[in-house]
Length: 371
Image 1 (spheres, helix red, strand yellow):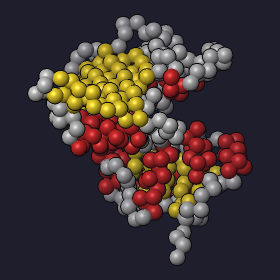
Image 2: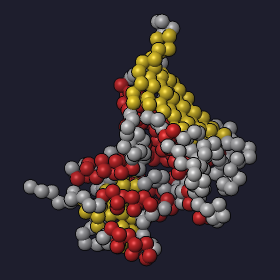
Image 3: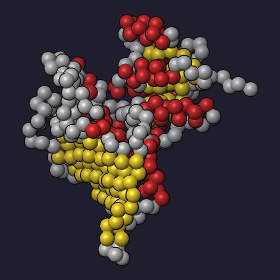
Image 4: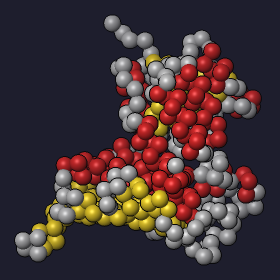
């Protein structure tokens, strides 16, 4: 007996919403019931290109015939709460793009709304489900490293001003904390989620940033690079550095078109040291180097290298569509969220503590004091 297609609605007509439309049409096991965007011009454009109904509000989407069973909330951060609450109250499951919301109070409301609903919320923290990042979690769980003692993450990327150099700052949404989140909330929050999975819940954070921003066109509250020193409930020391001001960009110099994974200055590296082993994971080049700490021979011994190349695009760590597809399969089979929303909320608490720490450099901020 053939099953009816799972019905999906999308709230948000930006790049992510369009990305999901493109990835899931056509698909005989899925039915896109509509997409929500306030712009009437964008509604017509998406409706014509993808042959899908377009609405102005989440309420209209939920009242449509057929109504969605799953709603993908991928609109602006400050609109996440309303769309998520409405969808949960309608009994829908929700895929919610990170961050959950621009305030912790709103994030808590989402957790509470899920508890009162028959639906579930899957937050888009996909990094932990990548081939490489997931493999490291597996090794930690197997005890390969013994007791984890220290963790370091380095994320070096080019700056975010891809638009014309004279574009008004207010149009650069990634640099607006409410809309994009800035250097921690936009992408650094993914690494905070990885830290939680590898080393336990984050309990305290210190933040350090340059006295003078090397990127003077960034807003005052968005430094070009940040170093966070964190402690977790398991006693693990963590160093996380995100840099926008080292790696080259090629937004306007079209002659420079390097192979991105091997572009000088672009790095996403994770190092972990435990009582029995350690690793050096190079995500851009898709290599995981593993070492054993031999106390009897007093030797740090190279064990092996696991190669993940060639990998489909972004499968190593940033496979948004893959996480959504897994969530949809779970719902279609009578399940729900892959990751508990309570865990995503823990990551949000750590992110807010990090944002607060940026306002008082070097001071130790307890996550419990920010909640």
